Image (tube, rainbow over all chains, first blue to last red; front, top):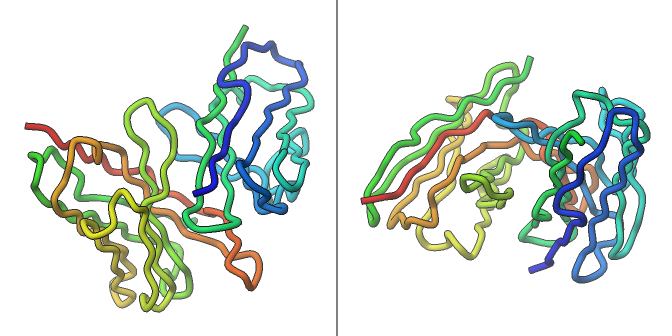
Length: 107
Length: 123
């Protein structure tokens, strides 16, 4: 199975900050990488698919980049509603696997 | 508005069985591949199983293979997960999700999720 490792596991930030979350795959996954946001008590919500494609309805402050083994999710200016846990997911091969999550909390 | 509604979660003893259901509204499930994804309390996301639109192809995580069975009844617009020989480590919130394949090779994302149904395995 492909292992997905996110860093950091958590970070404390302020509204308006630029946030960068990294996801590393244990082998090359081309660009088959998705990002989800999960708020407490809610189901995950797709933000980015295929490494950099913004899902319809997702604010443009979210962006994704990367290919191969290294990927990044960037939030250009953090808003109050962005405090949540973020997960990467590879769908290059079965089983599709998730990173362990990055908890973005208020400083 | 698309809604997926899971049901069937409960407290069950180790070795017991449960059947989860996922009913859809605002969406005709028969056109789409579907999945189950679980989340243990306070933990991350784990893919459990997939089923193709026709139901003719299924796949399972190694952790549940041979114990869980995914199925669907397209006439009822419903997805199922039969869970047998349950273990404490199966304790989790179980989500059903609509899978969207964005290329012909099956690369996908989970487009819609239900709110989950809680399975607790404990004596």
